[in-house]
Image 1 (tube, helix red, strand yellow):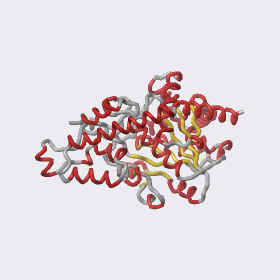
Image 2 (cartoon, rainbow, N blue to C red; image 1 turned 180 degrees about the vertical axis):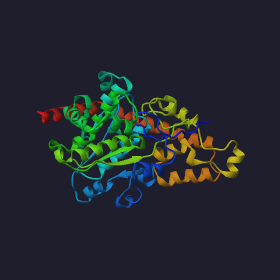
Image 3 (tube, helix red, strand yellow; image 1 turned 135 degrees about the vertical axis):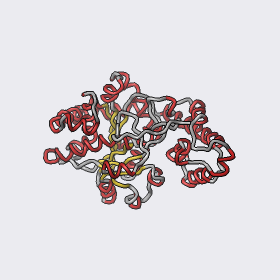
Image 4 (cartoon, rainbow, N blue to C red; image 1 turned 180 degrees about the horizontal axis):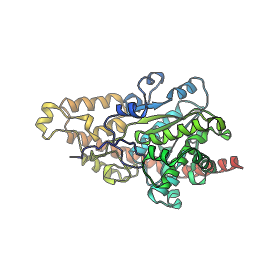
Length: 381
């Protein structure tokens, strides 16, 4: 059995935030509901259709840009502390989806090596090596490199310059109110992330435009800070407050908290040996009953099950398949052992195919990083 989720009053982008009541985020943090906007999408994403994406801020601006064939940016990044796990894949999937909606959409992908240094103690040399595989992963997932800008925070002077400018508009009390008591390095990382999010609106990138930032619910503090800074510097830069779309946090395989790179047992990565990842699935916590007899009599609890989360968020590509898994669980037809065995086979096959794609794209990843660096350097002169 997994431990019960412990929900914090504060959303913590650097910790192990658990969210059991997403309605609370609408009322307490002002995150807008997504369901009312989904009908405006001609082909809603898998995450939208299944309410894995649950919230938004000013998403209407992005829809208006799509409707009017206007430019917009898709912005997110990855902290290069290791290979992709399923939480980072969710953000990548949403980035790729929004890029696919319009030829006027450009992805800005930040390699958050400054945050990796401040939060995890990784040197910039270590981060640089990891970053290549991270970029190969997102290429394998479907990112179009022709409409993507990839950069390292530590090398992008515009981001650093904006973080310095933004520091005049914040106080320690403001940062503590958003993030809690933190080391100064993490506060600096937050200002740099605001620079990442607002950089696509600088003149060299076409000036002010809508920017959509796909994030997990725990990353909302960065969105709120960036929106506050966009408003504070609107007169100087013309910034439009960035939009955001929020996905739910996938549960750990042990049922205790969100999946995290910090706990190898709680998740598997896209670089895990496929058979080892399948074994983690087979050992995972479920929403099943104590006995088979009870499971057949009253059914399981898919809504509490990390194994069902894996189907819903990632591996049941067809909606009908996801619904069938859910209905069979609650109907007492599907037994947990059989369910995990079925998923383990899917996961093994998926990781084998993803590894093949990623390994074939490592050189492309290096070239994209270098091509973006040269282009950004020439703009800075």
